[in-house]
Image 1 (cartoon, rainbow, N blue to C red):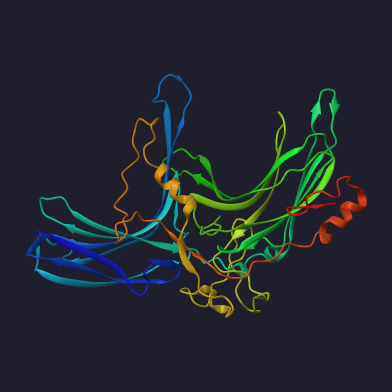
Image 2: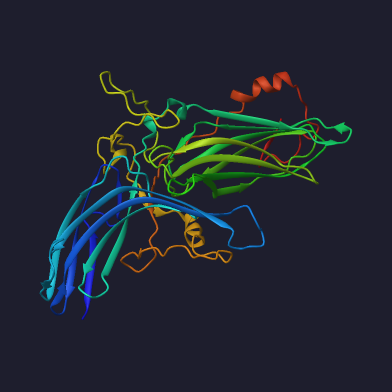
Length: 435
């Protein structure tokens, strides 16, 4: 007997939804003969879960001296009987094609779909044929849910240029060198996937140690938490989204560089909607120095949203209720249309949806490790209708990116305090500018 089950979403080929939307679709069952079942159920679930292992104290020779940390939160738990009921003992489904429509409200405060090494936020529809005295038949299709994060209603600091600097001295006892200083400046800190992050890096190398290379990196930082009955604990994971290799900086000189980092398809920043997984972003600039010395690094945090900053500043009307604040004190206003939250600005074209490439390796590495004695729990079938492995899809916008601030806006004071004349003024100016 052949049973074919297809789960389709209405007017949504990508299966991507925003919090607050209504998930609608249909289940199509095709049978070539009579099928006896106790019931046919449709389950729509949304949850987050974390799980990882750490070595515990005691005898280090024992490989089983490991402690498992885990947690789970549920956001959607809908169950509908398509055939039969909870009390039915046996039902027959006639051969042919049977179509069942369904609808489910997605809560507004659902966190975005995410697939990591030690945890995931996953949403799925599951059709189960409950069979008497036999194994149940399951058909599953996942869908993506995205947090509506409108950068226009977050902190106004997202529009303000951000600046960070650090300095480091190198010593060979008992002598100490002059400092190597890094200054990183961004025109704003709010971006969406598809935009370029322009940044300016001023390297003031007054030390005797040359900088062999600058590494500019866009990083996603993920924090996983466990919950009771597991022991409370947390672990971290670092994803590299994009990297640019910079130029060298000779000793006793100063040089200014301008770079751009493209934001790929990735989930929005999230601190408050999920108690198990927090997602943050930052831009890092690392000066890799020559010899046995510690590299110097400077970073600026970013906020990645799902609705880009518009040209005009949105002001919340008087009389509107105060919006809830997240862990960083950022207010979020509900969009006009949950299906198209960017439609409030006519200049923003609809995005396309892409897979987060940097999370693909994390999903594969979450399987059984060679050093683990107990395998991870088997995940349910998460294949797409075309047979490919499910991966969340995120919106990628094709909109203009901001430009880097002119160096005069943030280097004049520094240059006035530390008058510096570089002897190699005729050096290569294609990748940087000598100051």
